[in-house]
Length: 121
Image 1: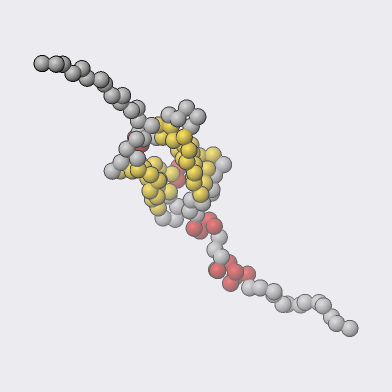
Image 2: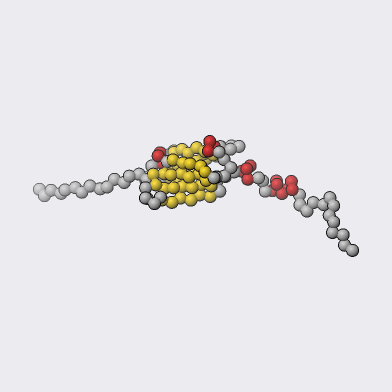
C-alpha cells in the first residue's frame, strides 16, 4: 500500500519564492494610465493607477512645458507625464480615489484669427 502522507516536506521554498517575486509594496510603481478629452472637449483627463499610496505622497509639477508626477515612497521617484503647448499645465488639478490618480488639464483657449482689410492704393 502506498502511503501518501507528507511529513516535514515542503513543496516549495516560501523564502525563495518571496525573494524571487517581491511584495508589490516594496516596488510600488504606476501600473497603467489612460487619457481622453472630456465631453465638452475643454479638458484632457489623465488617469494613473497607483494603488497603495496616500494623497500626500503625490506631487504634480510643471517644468519646461512638461508635466511631471513625483511619488514619495522609500525613495522619491518622478515620472514624466506629458508635454503639450496646447494645454494649460499650470492649471491642472488632481484627485486620488480608490488607487487611481485623476489629473484634469484644461486646454488653452485658441485665439481666433482676425480678417485684415486690404486697401487698394
